[in-house]
Image (cartoon, rainbow, N blue to C red):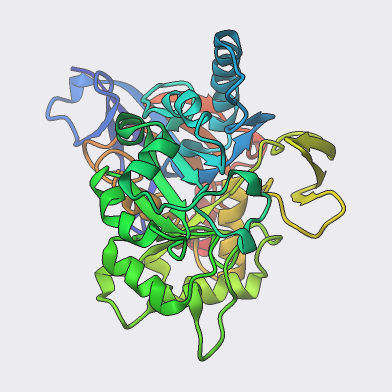
Length: 421
């Protein structure tokens, strides 16, 4: 047996800062371990010089990265196309790891039934040392509302009147769903969807309300049927009114027991949601808040115009719009940047903000025994942070990865930790 010891460091977990606490990793299992009884088994010691260790960040809604669109394969894709996509996928996931996101749910937007059997097997859950892991696909659509379509292609939209058979027909069969999918976003007012929620839950998939015109009561009914998440709160849904709170009112509804209140995704980029509304949602129910990027494949690419299916997306900095419209087309802000935004807008410390992309994210999709915590037995997926929330280094299953979030020269000293946190 051999172990790695991280020392002269502070830990962030459970929304708390644990000062001057060592962390141990079993080099054989690549999992977090308790302190070994025999000090001679510690074969590597890493002095972090007063920096902070947190669990690796989890991005549960991400449409693409570094030019790779997770939905780009189609019914005409050949075996060679799929092989090329896999190469592109590995390269993009390797680059994305450097931002501090150690696992994500590749998000497949509304598509035709012929597409899902080709793309979903590529997103089967992984555990690899040098790239961001997939936790299973996030299927956003095509059971969504035309009035809240966003940039989804409406020609792909369907209802669920056929029940389980229709669901499996669209997504490519029960095995494809069970083995390769983590989250399904759908609108509960679409015929047949509300009744399908218990079945979706039986397939070990999270049901999330999104791209919807549903009212508050139907949202409550969805929760009672097994819905446990809301996709990108405020976006692609009716806005709340003090007598008709809609989907937004579900994040702290008194109509269900507290443990049934759903987790909710927040795109904390300053483009999709005004900071004041971010603050309002977070303060309403911080333990169910999960920051998401909703990133499009243009993240990491230069500004300009990019063709996407039959549409054109204009990228200007972190802003993505469909050309000639005011329709947002996903985001281009990294998850660590979103964490820093939340700290500023909600006036909270780093431990609380980090919880939204680690503990909360893991709990929302049921992977808390493997990811998102610094508990014994969890994967050694770690980020090293300075007190400002910049990722200075990444460890994937214990292997060191250079960060792209901040120059190494900006790493902060231990003397500043107490003052800031």
